[in-house]
Image (cartoon, rainbow, N blue to C red; front, side, top):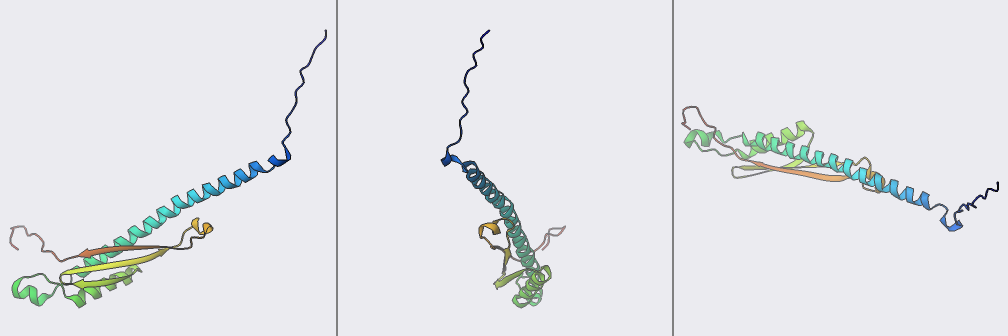
Length: 150
């Protein structure tokens, strides 16, 4: 019996194709790292921004509780004591370890908190810091009483 074997010719890579898979792999891994960095560091930067907003809100609330007692006792109006409101808001920011500015205009206190986030993975791409900020305002309000009288 005469068996005829088909000739199988294996294709050898051309010299110009060597290393193409390696370059594709490096580009792919770099892309995946950047995407992971955007997700991770973007989430952590968003968390830092939420924290800055929370500090601003709490400092504004603390400052809005500082009323001008003489005006309140005289005619029942709720107006802020600007000095005490600003000082209380700054005290809250200092206790929280946050930095920011406080402004009092009329019966409104506004707190701006700034923070800097240092990225974990995006620092490999040259992004060393991300600045975040949070702003909040508060005004004094009269609470409701059980019998409806102010």
